Length: 491
Image 1: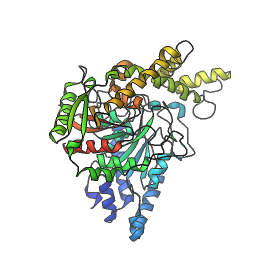
Image 2: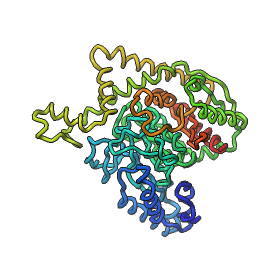
Image 3: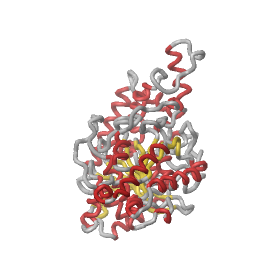
């Protein structure tokens, strides 16, 4: 296969591997993607920094391995030569790590995140750092201190957040796959809005070492890709125990691609799929409802057993999430004070240490981050801890139990990823509550620690993508991939 003959917007990991094995060049492929970035990014603004020198050195190494032939060529990594982008909340040595914030504008990390190390060990060509909502706090990617990302499918619309740059880069053909982070829907919602595949792994399945924290009990790292199979390949590379992350699981990582292949020969009738009424309320956009219900109906026609279920505590998810997430954010972001790294208020503006702290944080943080820090500090304060934070954790347990009970009856759960297609830039900027409600179908999985993903299932009348969310049991990504592959085959 000649990689030059296929648009970068349609290339898959399989295409790259086949092309390089047939004599195409990883260096030329990387250059094509950089050319695509040069052409599209002035409008989309998905990239904050490019790591051309590192990428080209890796691409040259991959070309040498393929040219060597024999066992050397056969032993190249699963992602050999694949252009990959990395969300700017993950650190990479030699590249800025701003987390979309002015307070980290000049920060250059001295090490790589574990997922970055694993990508490169598998042969991935790391193209650069991707734009995101500041400290991953947002649902539209309009909160970045470096300007909003626009949706490549329609430049008047948001790409979703907070991993909007990661989703937009894949959709625009700037890279074949990318990494994002998901604290309450920040992979799945942008995947839905941009028409790509996005995976939320089970909590602890993927190392968080080198991830700039938002809410540590909720944060996950996961992949974006054009196909379910590609997403499975990337997850198989980055998943697994990491001694540098005490919360990472020591469970063996399945071969997700092999299990996907094996499941293709098994009857669909062995799959029981649950549809929770709570996710199909009156606030659901009619076009989203039609697309998602159509996909569910087709899965039933294919032989899956589709049954109604209930997740009764879903209605409490948004308030519980925004208490827990902001409380953890308040604690995590206390370290950004101008003392050790990042922005510091000028000496002439701050005469005392406490004044330097205040001015640094006031100028360094954006409005949404400051709003969440204030909320989190409030719910953790004396006299309010039990009323808010403790109660939210109790609700979290009830939500988790809802899922545990449901998974006794079904193998996976099907819902819309987002209540609407992508909304217009600026449409919800002045209404934080409306913005928070954009996460209404995704925050439950983060609270419960389960896995999930978004896969395209249709388009609106104005040609905006719509995503189907598939939720699975703890550490059962294989079943989620299986259902997602079936849904993808229906498109």
